[in-house]
Length: 394
Image 1: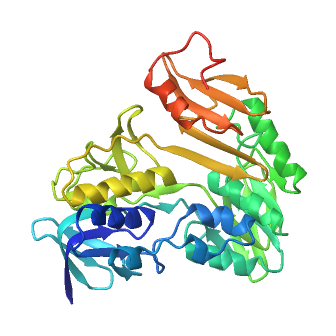
Image 2 (image 1 turned 30 degrees about the vertical axis):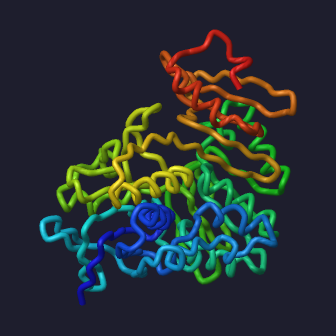
């Protein structure tokens, strides 16, 4: 069976939702199709590790994006796009369906990085989707022992969520102090202490080298020679960008698998755009980069939709990112790499502003429990200098 659309979107995440709504800003009547590998409609991923766990009054209905209802887009879910014929302007999927398009957006995001020898199973969840949330909710109803692997965004947020919901949690990460690859020592130690004070067993300085599952649980074999036994494991080690489809269709991809686009989010094919986690684009402040955060998904997706529908705009939004951990929170812009020189400015209310300094300019700003600082932080980055004093910038 064949379906033809004026606008076709490959990927069923937040970018697809934002793009469909962006299309409708410019074109009220054009037909929109969305091909989603996941079995559920586009859903806000941050809620899966944040508010759905931490706010008892917040439900899936509260988070729902309403993509189809608001835009009239037709959702084709549970189908993977396997081939793009750019000459014929058609897509073929894993279910044998064929879809024609006038203009195409690739918003395939990425797939969770996996640990060799530890396959996804009933007791091992590589956490990313609404389906994973449902599985984890059901599996933790009796408050089991959960091993969480990964000290980044997903790992720390899920570990915090689970311990606050009554599960026993062991958090495995590779650093001596939790967060020390990202934060300066004074912040990293605060993060580490928050988790241990909350009852999380923080197992630092080790990576998972392998493991196995049994009907009774999961075993994780660590690089420090120890073993963690738990009822289930949740893995959050980031994603691999899903740029293979674009590469197979002859489009340019970056060294890490992202899809190369210009300032209009357009690939070398003028009728094919890419956006979201998978797109490597020229940020007007920070240079060419690929960003895996919700602010970028929403803003880039909306811009891509408008451009698909005829806008000649340039994507000039520099995205921020954020996290909530227990009673702490932060926002940030740019590169957070603790191996860089860091300048920490204490604020009167107990927050901190951290500047990450490269060879000749500030490359990142962390706002640790500091509000209303994102736009000033962008101005600091846009100056492309190292200020004489950091005290009164934000």
